[in-house]
Amino acid sequence: MADFKTHITASTSLGLIYSTAAYYTYGVPLEHCLIAGGLCSAAGMLPDLDSSSGIPQREMLAFLSVFVPMLMMPRFQAMGLLPEHMVLASGVLYLLIRFGVGGLFKRYAKHRGMWHSIPAALIAGMITFLISFSGTTEIRIFKAWAVVMGFLSHLILDEIYSVDWQGKKIRVKRSFGTALKLVGKSPILNMLTYTKVIVLMIMIASDDYLMDSLCGHEHGETKSGFDWVMHFINDHDHGHDHAAAGDGSDLFR
Ligand SMILES: [Zn+2]
Image (cartoon, rainbow, N blue to C red; front, side):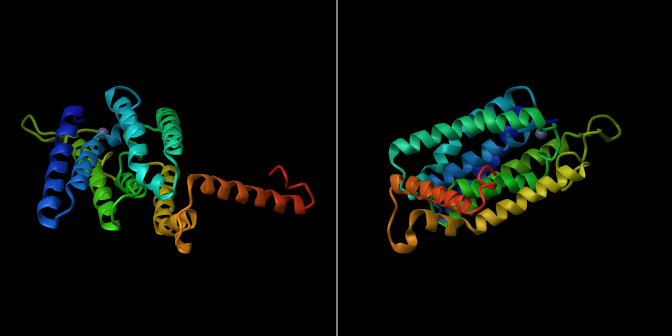
């Protein structure tokens, strides 16, 4: 298994090449290139979120819980949230990632399970697309690919380090084939992983529609944070009206 330093060096170099090429070849704005480079670098450690101990998991959780809310800011802004609401939303996200996602990984993820796989790299990329809301769709895809590449660099390195190149004979370790894989041993986990891929694809496809309905763009107006909260409360009340209209037995469902 490649160590922390090897992974981070590889993904940082890759991020540097990727963002430099985008800047000079396609004229992608510098700030987006810097973010993409940083995302690629960090994604090089992302698969080890499933290693239940040590620096990688702790560092990754700290990184995600701080940077995900930051990347979400343009989306919050598009929703018309007030600065105070953004702070609150960021705080909730911090707790959700640090303790919610972190707790799930600590409890359920097996090292080199399905989080070390090609579909997991796609999942990480698609989540990045949804989170990074600023710029054009091309810029969002550019950042999503940065994460996929950083993630894949980790899986490739894990596989390379599963082969013992020293000595007269090349020896393949037992861990070979457990990182860069499409499916794992458990059919249930495979199904869960690919379900996530499909759900995220649907979320991406309906993202514009969802944001339009939340922000009121179709009416050429932007809802304020307060309007947005009221919109949800009204919808919620609506749901109760429907339930009350029934025989009452469905009120607590
Ligand atoms: Zn690994």
